[in-house]
Amino acid sequence: MRLGIGAVVIVGCLAAVFAQKTTPLKVGANGSPHVRSEYTIQGAKITLEYGRPSVKGRSMAELTPEGKVIPFGDDQATTITFDKALMFGMRHIEPGKYTLYAEPGADEWHLIISKQTGQPASEFHEDQNVARIPMEVAALPSPVEQFTLTIEPKGKGGMLYADWGTRRASTFFYPMGEMK
Image (cartoon, rainbow, N blue to C red; front, side, top):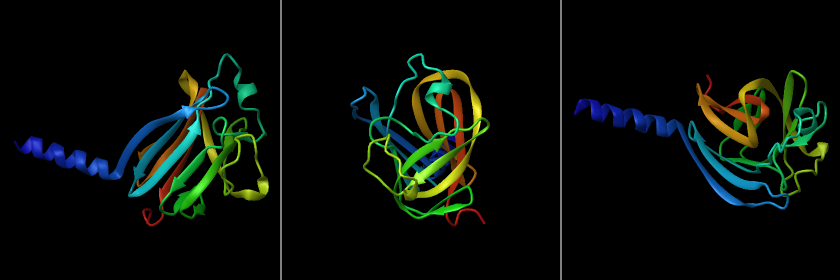
């Protein structure tokens, strides 16, 4: 019986650190399914809403051209909402709702966090940027047909992953006050 109680305590502790729920929302104008994914990392509630375009035989150079700002999703601009201040890299971001873009590079991408929300995914205004965060890029072990954003716990924070085609871009973040 002690083993059963211990397992419940461990599962309960993990649930306090990380929770995830993904809900289908609609099919967008370009045919991409839209989802809302909700996470809890160290008590911070984080929600991603985005369209999930497919590769459809296109090359990664075509989908993620180097040096060009691209939407992180399809149709409406991808949004991230969080209820606690987060640190992305060395950038402190206040709680709120933001739009995500990316700027692919050969060895590193940049995650762009914009304060403008509600616009089409293709509409980008640099003067609305809150932060540009470096993202590591790695090859995926197997291709991913549909663009996927996920958050996974790591240490006292989490990793934001963007998987599409043969690439994974990622960046670490943590709720303010968690890293001491």
